Image (cartoon, rainbow over all chains, first blue to last red):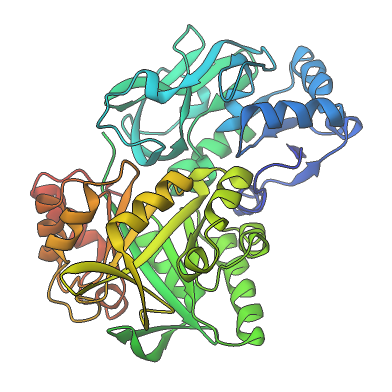
Length: 200
Length: 253
């Protein structure tokens, strides 16, 4: 059983549907105690970083996610969920994240040229290192991005995308993983990436 | 490199996909769930659903359809039609929509975009404008293209983007449904004035029209069409091959 962390932001409907499409049983976990009953966790997220961190703290999920990560439970952060794994974000102020992935989350406008449209919305190719998340995925496959902030490059980066500049598309450190794109919205390739995570 | 998106648009009325000419005279043509699945498998990059129901029953039916589509289709879904309050945003987002497109609702309540963008993020808020040439300028029309709001389209769209709209759909009433090609001139005049993604809509009659669009309107990020896809005059796969051959970046699948 896979757990989807629900902290009151974002739309879980698509994620639940995509997991059921690939035959994975999932349940929504909104209480900290529910996290230990599941074998894997997905941390979804749409919205603002600071808001999300506040909600994770208020619900007690923040510390429990850290506990589960420490135990080696596989965790996949998606979009804002990936950014939450980082040490810190500069989205509307300065906020501490979960600190499971090294580095910071910064505004795309700092690295993109003036003519680049932000948010970065749409299908963009990924180039990745050898990692189980990308089993049987072709290099330069297109996946769907929607974001205005990015995680800085570090040794935890396992995939990049190229939109005027190269930046982080996916990260991993031990059993903690994250993707900036939305696998649940990236067609067959996205479903395969989710399946790869579920089979770890 | 970011790919140019091809977006089939499904106008849903009484549980069926319909398509009219110049915004009028809609006739029923297909089951929306089947059609959505078909497009998704065929390589559509995104789907747009417009709820053109006139009744409460029709609206309920639409929500059911949306849920069914979201269970089967794993590409982005944008929903529009009758969005006039923050509760409307909530209702369709809970059913699996990724983006919500506002049109008349933003004209009636100028605070709606800001409110929605601060709650759900700009990436979720799409301003869709129905534009027609009138009195030597581009004018915004409301209520499915029936009412001239008197607003200048360029000023209106800039204002919506400032308020937090994260994407713009430009529908040309002058070219809608007549299949003579996209409104290149209008799109260029309006596109250059905003710094968020722009979706061109209205007038696609052939695959070549999309080539013309992306070659002549470099600022257009996506092309939206309905009838040429619904009547299978152009397949998305063939269209993408043609675009690719012409050096336009598209997602092949």
